[in-house]
Image (cartoon, rainbow, N blue to C red):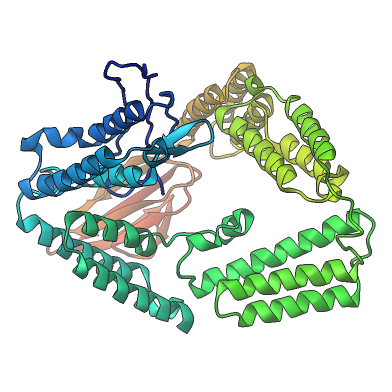
Length: 508
């Protein structure tokens, strides 16, 4: 992942006087992201002006090391060597083309100096919080090796991978260890860390997203489950393609089409790695279009003019939606749908890729995103339904419940936000729970012994009365609600729905 380096330079006056250049750079906080993306220079055509501008940028990347006390001497000396070598090289350059190169909006930093700036930025991360002394270099090496080994042991199980990916993992691990052990400078060690951390530490992927955005290269080692998921997701794409063609009037339910899908399933199931699954998918896609007689020659191209019209139509569709009608999350869903549709049109080659079916699907997706009003109505309905569950429930005092229900429904209907609805629902559910009926369990005894005290219990609850005679005494009788029951040391009233009494008699 590359981190942007903003290089904003004010115009440099080109004259006999010494030019001035101002560079503003943004630095990251970790060694895990670095690189350069260069913004344009605007300094005229003077070599001296460009040289001073480039040096100004280079100096900005050296600035962290000006604070000597923030860095172990070894790190600072390595950075100084890189900085001085590039500074000397810049002073030997005599042509503008050697100092800068053309960019989209103007001249940008040349690749060599940009790489040096990246290296200085990486080294600047190794301040005293990470590198306290000379031993720190070996500590870095040892920790990096240990981290990679530990992560592989925790995240990768032999049972999850086929031979192809497991062998690849082992080979890459050996190469990583070799590269880390071969590092002889702080910079090489940081670069080795960056080279391998994404490989061994990124293991959580969803097949649907990989297929949707075609990010197959982001996964270095496919576990068998993910391979199978990718195969299934690609098959779903084939089915969606067939549905699209069917809507366009093609007859897709044929033995030949079924055979294509079966061939894909067999090939995908036997594929040892993802590239073979992709090949099977593309073969199936080509076979389907061939069976239906769809060829590049038979498909109307999406010309620049048609593409502009499609984009204009999409924009008009999008503008029907108002941000004020949606919550933040829902509006982001609208934007995502629009951006994806716009990207699909821009990448499309044929007119049928931006036809009525395409726009109908986009319109359907946009309409499915809930407005604040729709979400509020759903939340109100759900809240009222939650309160209604208490109405008629014999466990609760219905006089209180009906009063609370009427009051709660009135307030919920008057609420203007989902947050208010949630708060009111929780408030009234809590109040209704307190309206549960209760019944008295009266416990009495005669003779010497201990029994659980009388209590009031909630409707539907259970209550156990423990019975313990004093030494030398025994339980003579237990009478529950006026009837004798079997002698026991604990009597439980289950699912209490009325008042009960229990009398225990102890005797010698």
